[in-house]
Length: 440
Ligand code: NAD
Image (tube, rainbow, N blue to C red; front, side, top):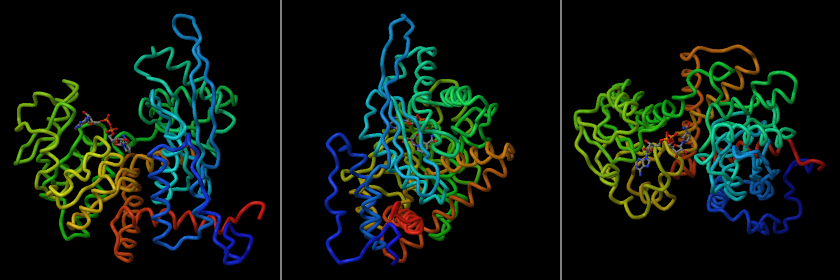
């Protein structure tokens, strides 16, 4: 291997990679898990230690003070973060979170996960993430707007359509992105709609973005069923969560002939062996704000829902709902992770041994970031596609990612989560070796 690459396996000495220490303020479980996954994925493809060492460090961590005038005319100073984890494959890409628990360790962990996800999905993006330590429910609309605009201005020199493209996450939404886009554009002197994704349609957002994650979950489930010799038509599906991801997954799966036999939200779970009419559920949910009191199903607990016998279980609500305590009791034939991290690593190992197929979150819920990518492409071209074209392009990209991980899983005889990590690290490694290490 030439010495102008990122790799220098020159003298057979123990590589320095082992000496990496994670600083105290970055020791967040999300980051530590991401590091473990990078190592595991790297091991599977016998990755170069020098590359793995680079993948285990964020490239740039930005901390900004965000002073804003509150409604009572006093000034409060919030802390904002933008972490630019890796840009080997393209501009940084990842959401902005407004939550009282946001800290540097969490943002670094989430940024690392975005690098892993963008790589496995085959997108031309690196990984990034940002946030502000704030409880957005305690701010008025004006305060939220002031906060968003000043934050955008503070990180302005570091973001941009070719540099770093934020998107919504917990506590932020399409309106937040509209303010970010406007602020960045005002400061540039012209409209730059490609600086953020997840915008309202009227100002450069993409059709299909709202339902993209749920649709991706269904495309992945369909492909997994095909691989296992089953079909979506007539499949009995159980879904935890009826928010953005769960309700769209339910709708698109039932449109493809599946029976949604159980569904849940924060008010509990509802069972109907003949399959729910999903449009009725959506209407009820919109009218009442949740599924509480839905009359056409038998009530059960969320824990019971997870243990139902079914062709596919789609956890689309919370992290860690399937762990060491209930994994052994799961009777689903496959699990498709709509939420982030609903099945713990310990549970994954138990389920894999039991022969239960798991489509991991970094692929299964990647539909959102894929359509974010389409939004950015459309903004860049100033040419917009119809929803049919967007959904078909999404299907192709997500199935390609699934198939790559599936082949890796077969070849290495590992579960899909490990396989997806290996595919991700492999793509990053190839690009890093080709680009080399600057200055040498
Ligand atoms: P959401 O807030 O729209 O919906 C969450 C749903 O979960 C609600 O129906 C809520 O009632 C339900 N819920 C809350 N507590 C519950 C409990 N204890 N038991 C059962 N249900 C419960 O959120 P969302 O956007 O649908 O996201 C869901 C998950 O998917 C999160 O983990 C999120 O990080 C992940 N995700 C979302 C997207 C996206 O595009 N929205 C993309 C990737 C990953």
